[in-house]
Length: 334
Image (cartoon, rainbow, N blue to C red; front, side):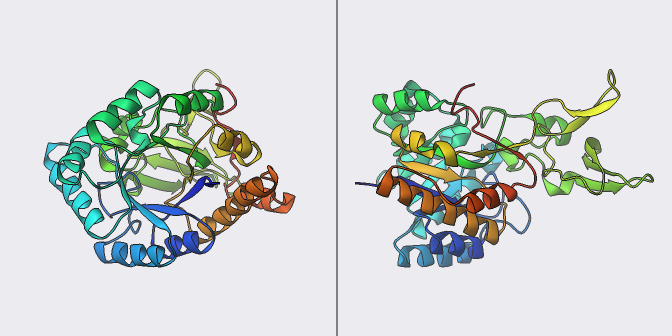
């Protein structure tokens, strides 16, 4: 029986090695720059690092997927095409793309190569998925985090394209690829430049009363006390001042963390081919620990039908999310 794939994140070479060594079947990563949607300083890979990463993974019979999943404007298209060329020439097992121009370039120049449709394309129904399969030859779709398990099961019955779903990590309230909140604050959209809260716009300011403010391009996203845990600031998870109540509150989305460990058997039984762990911006230790837990859970499922891991491991897994509340997202209902 073919097991569901565990697809792990890597923001640097140590994280990739941690993913591979602790049980990931595949690792997804990106080049440094605007061509992928985790465009943070000191994150992602140079061409030489990609070469080393692919060698390391392939030596252990693991796969590497390269993200080229931003939506480049006209002047940036050559950079996206160059990233595609580099990815395939270095031996990537697949390119993960979303923009139609990039997908068309891959189909025209590399028809024999494997391409996955990024979650940024927000393909959430069978007709859309089949459109991308017919016109661009996609082999896999990464589903947006807006579908229930029943909807995924129905999709599985209507398409032969492989299905990948998120199992762990931060949630996005918007349909991926359709969020422009960051552009209202900074003029740079995550869809084009790869970060909804790019560090170059973020300021942490200590106030006289001992509290701190987090600002993005001068806009206050949060205010907190020294002992309070807060998530990395993003516009959708900002805690804004309500003039009516005089209080700060999460006006758009409560900061939550997706964790499907308890319902993983249902997700596997829906017919998905791959479960994806979010977190290319996270540390090597994080990658090592979450991959180890999900490796144990998946192996237990195929041995006994249960994805149970020890309570201490479950508790430790949740502690990695900086106090964010766990959620099943939309998987059990919207």
